[in-house]
Image (cartoon, rainbow over all chains, first blue to last red; front, side, top):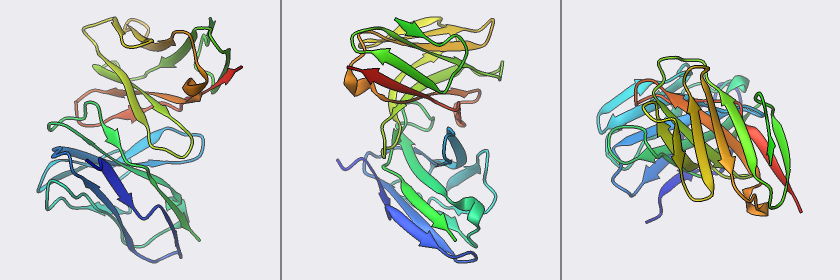
Length: 113
Length: 111
């Protein structure tokens, strides 16, 4: 199993550009989530999903959209990037529909200029 | 061993000593707590979790203690090794769907 994979590893965007951060897992996990991590801080939950077709907002959802059309994939979309969205983004998944023992991906480092 | 009374951002510990990392949580409704380890350039890695109906749980070289009265969580690492150098985060959940992370403690192991 590859576990949780994220692409790209690094990305630089200009203000106003849009992009999608990809996240995939091959463990048949129901629960998936997106976090952002800013320097010197803990992770903050952006959005989460308890299964295909079901998503909900986390602590900091503004400026981000998600969808969950399959169990495996959970992409995060930035519709109009802002410098405040410069951060490291982590995707995670866990067995079942709850957040126990989440497995995290390696992260995507995003810079918005 | 060395310990942090209140949450401090860094902890330096001698190799072989025990480490104690403290965490205060704010939501009295939280009933599930997790400790994660994050090495440089990597995603967080699950260490151990505990439910609010327990006050202690042990894993391999790690013990988590929960004091609900004062809303305090601690992680004890026995015989700290160089590979334990990392940032440690506590996280809490009140509803099994949303996890809130603390600010993290950077542990440095001295040889």
